[in-house]
Image 1 (cartoon, rainbow, N blue to C red):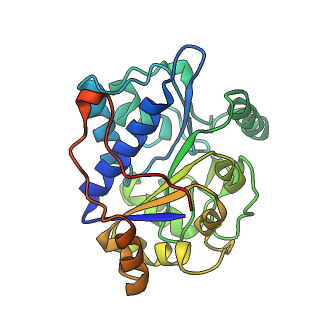
Image 2 (tube, rainbow, N blue to C red; image 1 turned 45 degrees about the vertical axis):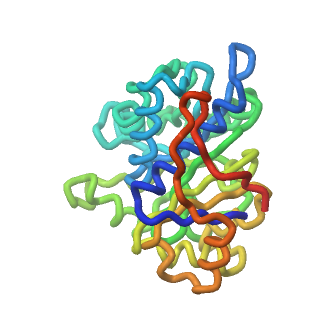
Amino acid sequence: MRLVILDNYDLASEWAAKYICNRIIQFKPGQDRYFTLGLPTGSTPLGCYKKLIEYHKNGDLSFKYVKTFNMDEYVGLPRNHPESYHSYMWNNFFKHVDIDPNNAHILDGNAADLQAECDAFEKKIKEAGGIDLFVGGIGPDGHIAFNEPGSSLVSRTRLKTLAMDTILANAKYFDGDLSKVPTMALTVGVGTVMDAREVMILITGAHKAFALYKAIEEGVNHMWTVSAFQQHPRTIFVCDEDATLELRVKTVKYFKALKRGTVPTPAYSQRTCTHSGTTDS
């Protein structure tokens, strides 16, 4: 496990985007060799997506041979609803890059058989060869995707009832009206994400500081599902200074000593986006 601490949200977003950029370029994807990327939604990854779009428009990154699998989708919300995760992904990322729509996989929260939809999603991931890099974000209660507190740490893609904390947090996207917020969602499981060859989790803001503390300084606990990734062989947490407020000073100093978290100028002329090192624990 590794923790990269940046000064602020913008630098954390840039670091994460460069990391993704590097992984794709170094993989050398092609017609018979697709890079498979797991993606989150929410406010945290928006800065990262903006940077990836910038790299694409500059001609430094292509998604032509990239397959994506999103973490989750609300149940019962029309696909074209402005707050559906289909709308989120297309408006904030997919329509701005050269990804083939057939390669962008998002769960269908309006499927006639929701369990069959979840099973099919797992099958598609397996047929794609698994996830090379799964990028995730967390809620203030430490949930990853919609794996709410108490979720099984070996869970697979399934239907979940949302916790009240999640509904309250998401009400801001529905004009503050709790009655408009979906109460159920389809989500990849903790085990689904753990199967990825590499995991990068973005955590920013003081309101997520306690969750980061639970994620890396205490033991694995199904009430804080993000803590499961302590046991993944290649996990990297990317955070800003505000998110470290609950960490021990010794912890912060240790990880800063490993890598100061500065973001060097990307070597675009070499068709790569500079990042720091490997994620091996």
